[in-house]
Every structure is written in structure tokens, then in C-alpha cells.
Image 1 (cartoon, rainbow, N blue to C red):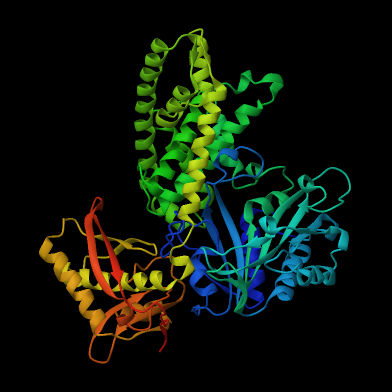
Image 2 (tube, rainbow, N blue to C red):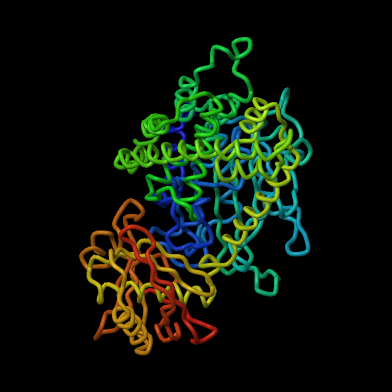
Length: 611
């Protein structure tokens, strides 16, 4: 019997690829450790970028894992049958090992032999080619070889069948996507001819090119495979349900939400209204995302990840208000309990931090209830100023600042015998979305993921900075966060007092002394236990595999830094250039932040190697 439950499907995937020689590695936290290009881990490949770019992975060349992910690009689409902000991605990788033929053969075998999906229910897409790269006839030939007929193979443009690079330059290449028939009647066509009849469930990316600074593409020396299968979508297929909210792990959460909906009995004809279902799905998805984010150490705030978290919680509460669900502090923790029940057995940190998760949600819920009350006061002021219509800008201000959905503003306006200029609201909302998307694109441009000389210098400098801080302030100092662009580094560390000018000077001098001494940098692969014994710096938790890379800065006479990291680093400290601290400030309670730059150093660098 094929696996049907989400838990069985997850395990079947890991078992299958382990049997094919892949090492099972733990999924990374939602907070990217050394990738400033994204606020959250949005795909399984993000934690593996250094290895896809050539760094040797401690577990070998074949890897498989399950990665929890957060994506908010399509947040306004959540509530339909397939969009989620929080989901699990099943992934397998080849780091310079097998390529198109091996990846496609294994994908097809898993789908048809392990999941027992009939071949006639499948279709695929391949890259159609353009001026940068030729049509991917190789992938299409592999699909024909395993038995996919030509009429089920669609060739699509770069926007649909190409991945990367992660930054402006770097590894990239064509991909091939696998689809399952969800249309009516007998399966026919392909994702190009009748796209809406096919649901994408899996994607194999073939990293075979390097995009250069001048925009041209050259073949990569190390060709990699990066794949991703959406666990929820595949579970929906295996369980024969019409959408991802009906699968076995998500439906209990949705049902809990609906039980709290006091007007279920008023729904027309014994069936839930479409709008009720949409709001219940939003609550389910957003609170699930919030639980996972808080479980990985983020609290609601007005900046970066904390702001995204706050937005998710408040959107869920707004939907709860629309459903008549009481939201005075007990609603979100109650739903969180059900979420932990569904996922805590696999993601142990959710059980460990359940009290912390529930408390954070309850606090945010109570705070937002107060904000809604303030928003009602602002609405009354708008009523007094307006004639018979609330203008679109005011309606959007109520939405953006106080969390009032347009429907709520319309209801309040109707009670006051007024209308709302919805077209103006939609225009303001559209502009807001464009700005948000541009911001997201900027967040995804450049950074450590492109492994330029400048970002590699700065990344190495963070290790020197961390070691220097521990020497000056004490062993209580640990890295709490890092953000690197091509221009500067930002380093968060545990310390509960503002640093004095003298301490900052000491730290800066220590880093520059290490740079002047041109110390060699090497790494070695060892076990977690051995890394602990050699006093390597690291936060030892579930993010580490059984084997890790330890980077050592120093020579026979002096060891300046010994730290666990994926890389990359320069080969010698003298390549970094002059280190200057620009600012020291508070980041959060008990956490300080340093911003620094490096100047000079060679334009061309060498990378640290094993030794």
C-alpha cells in the first residue's frame, strides 16, 4: 500500500532516498543562519547554498531532508485551495554527483512505484530555451525514456522553468516540474495546453550554468541537482482531497477554528459560505506559520521577521473577528495547542516552547484588540470629516494601521448610512503591494548567497569579531544573528550592556591585529561531539548534522577563532582588509548589535580549504 498519511509520506520520501545513497540531514530553522537575502527560509536549498556553490558538505554528495518554509509573497492568495505561507518541502540534492538522468529516474520511480500514481495521471514541463541557454532536450529525453509520452511534456519559458541565480550572479539552470491531473474527465494535454487541469507537486532544478557579472552564462564545473516536493500538495493527492486544508495534519486545525465560529448554524442551506471558508483557512494557515516562527525564536515586533509575524497574527485575528470569534487573549493560544498537537511529534521544538508560543500569541492578541478599539475611534473621526463617503486613502489607512479589512469598514460605514470608495482603497492597496514586493526583491538581491569577494571577506570578519567580543566581554557572548551585504556586516550578540568606547576600540584592534598577522584559515570535518571537545563555538541544537565543518583561524602558535560554520571564508585573514566598527546599539533585550565595514584587501580572493 502506498503511503497516504502526511507522516507516512514524509518518512517514505526520506527512506526512499536514503536507500538511494542519500544522507538524511536535519531541516534548518526558519531563520537563515548565514543568508541575508531572505527573512525566512523559503526553500530547502537556502541552507545549502554554500554547498551548491562548491563547499564540501560533511555528509557527502547526496543529501535528503524535510524543510519547514515560510513564504509571504502570495499572502493575499491564502484562502484558496493551494496557497500556504507555512509549508514543508521534501528535498533531495546531488552535489556534483548524479545529474538529469539520475534525478528524473528517481523522481519517476518515487511517484509511480512508492506512491503508486498511475503514469497517465502525470505530466511534466521542461525549459523551452532562449538566447541564454538552449532548449532542454536532455531532460525531455529522460522523461521519454522512463515512459512519459511526448504529448504530456510541455516546454515553457524561463519564467516557469528556470531557477536562479540566488543573487545577481552565481549558479542557475533549467528545471523540470512534475504535475498531477486535477481536471475533470480523462487526463489529457499538458501544463502548457490546459494549465488549470494540472497541479504542480515536484520540481527538479539542474544547476548547470554560472551567470557572470556581464549577464552572460557559462557552464559550471560542478553541476548540481536541487529538488523540492511540496508535502501538503502531495498529501492532498494521496488522500484524495480537493485542497491542502483538508489533509490529515491541517484539517483538525481548520475544524477547531470552525467550531469557534458562532454562526455556523446560520450558514445557507447547511453549507458554509465561501467567505467563511476563506477566513477559516486564513486563520489556520497564518496561526500555523506564527507557531512555527515563534518556535524558532522570533517574537512579534515592528521590524523585519517580527513584523511579518505580527502581520500574520493580526490577519488571523481580523478573520476571527469577521467570523464572530472572541479574540480577547484566549483564541490564538487555543488554536496553537491544536497546531502543536499535529506537528510537535516531528518538530520537537514546538513541544519544548509551547508555553512561550502560547504566551506570545496571547499577548499579541490582547494588544491587537486594543488597537482595533483605537481604530474604531479613528473611524468615528473619519465619519465626522466625511460627507456620505469614506475615501479610499482613509479606508486603506484604517486597514494598514489598525487592521480594518475593507469589509469591516464597509459594514461600519453602512451603519452610518455612508459608502466606501472601494476603487480608491484598491488603488492604495495595489501601490502598497508593489512597494512590498519591491522590498522583497531587494531583500533577495545580492548578499552572502552570491559569494562575492566582498561578502566572503565580511563573513570571515564576523568570525574574527565574534572571537574578539568573547575575549573583551567574556564567554557569555554568542552570535544571535548576522546580516551581510556587499557593503557591510551586521552582527547581533548576547550582552546586556552598552559597550564603552574603550571596549569597542579593544575589539576593533584585536580584529585588525588578526588581519595584519595574515593568519591562515582552514576547516576540518568532525563529529558534533568532537567539535564540542575542541571548544568550537556554536549553538548546539537540532540544526547540526552528525558531522560539521569547523573553521579554524590561526597557525601553530595562535588560534584566534574556532567556529562551526558552513562557509565560505577567505584563505588568509590578510585578504579581508581594514576592519572598522561603525555603530554599536541595542537589538533587543539582552542582545547588542554591531555594524562594521571592511576596506581594501585584494579584489580577487582565495577560499579557505580543508586541512
